Image (cartoon, rainbow, N blue to C red; front, side, top):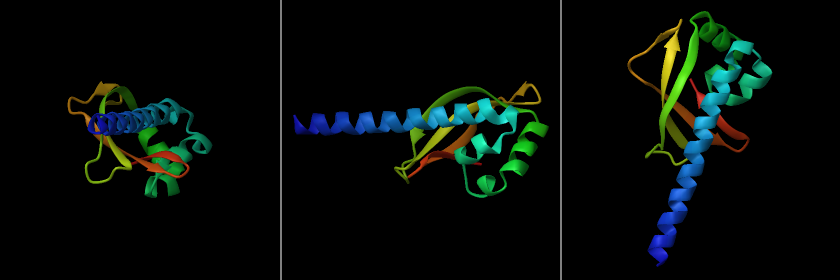
Length: 114
């Protein structure tokens, strides 16, 4: 009984993480055309967050857009990271190979590492 309960709790925690990561990716790409770093900056981590304007301008210049989120899995090496597999278009052309996006949980929310 306890083993089943623990498995259910772990699964529930994992599904909350993957859903939060999916939502972060979707929010980022929905806001990308606005070029608004007040919205986009808090969704980014690492160098991309430090250079939000440059990152956003570069992505928009090349016409990056989200076609669909295919799946998301908690990173086996880091329980606070989720790898999101997404289909991306560039200048209107959908890439055949999905892009792997790393989304990390931080005290202030989930952030995308580009």
